[in-house]
Amino acid sequence: MKSRTRVFALIAFTASLALVGTAPASATAARTVELAAPAGSGLPPYVAVIKPVTAKRLASSWREGCPVGPGQLRLVSLNFVGFDGAVHRGELVVNAALAVEVARVFADLYFDRFPIQRMETIEKYDSDDDASMAANNTSAFNCRPITGGTAWSNHSYGRAIDINTVQNPYISRSGAVYPPNGAPYVDRTQDLPGMIHAGDATERAFTTRGWTWGGSWTTPIDYQHFEKP
Image (tube, rainbow, N blue to C red):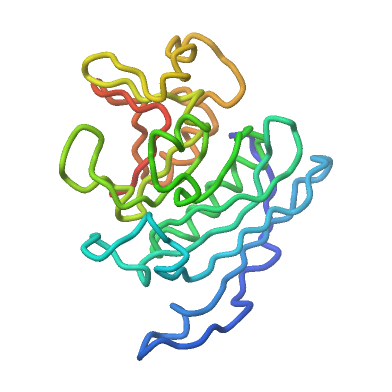
């Protein structure tokens, strides 16, 4: 990651929401993280807003029996740079304990102008991981088992994020590629927009904060996937 001066312009609690039971105020307030753009970058300030999320908002991505409840999750709305070079707003649902860290990770990607195709919470795809991947959607929380297994995925805890799923496909032990439209990107000698490579700025934004990258696994290989168990 290129060295840049990044000044926290604001880390503040900006709104109080109705208390639920005896939950502390910090669990029911929105938090805004704002970072000034480097001089000459041409980018507006990076702004991430972290809010509590309800079962209604999670819709089909959550149900009774999931390993974490809505109170343990947060909705993060943040800036990202699209493949068109413009600034867009996207949303991720992540574990409450990781919300500020995730906001800062994506600030690094934003200032590096790493392009992201789209960023929508997965209930927009009826919580169908295959549909979300085929749409090249960057997403996080989804209460589901691991691919090809029965144990809970780290996505079920809000502790995993998949980025640019077409440019960074999942390759199973049998060699199957998911999503299928990611097949042209299996050749990792290519250096195309939106791809993640070992040691690049995107990989380091996560791994220097203790996240694991699925692209470093032997089999299966999951180039889109970062997790922090």
